[in-house]
Image (cartoon, rainbow, N blue to C red; front, side):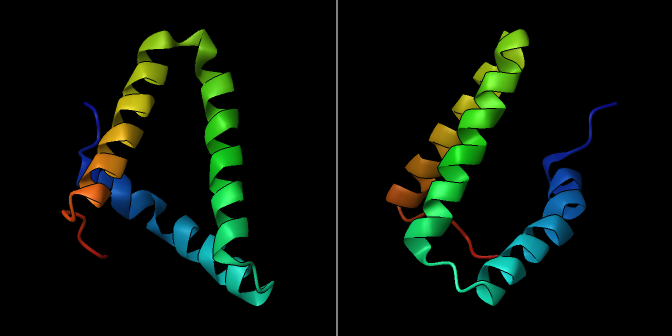
Length: 77
């Protein structure tokens, strides 16, 4: 049984908060944080080359996130 998106969000939320705390502690700028996100996304897509369905799912989720942001539909956690 696949975890729900809410279950997945709860599972990774502590990691995300830890990363954000580290960014703050090291005074990482928004631009630098963006580069980190792009670098991690690139690495993940490279790893997912062996699983095209998972790679496509990630890319579609990423595009959906950007579209929701541009449409002003994102909610803050």
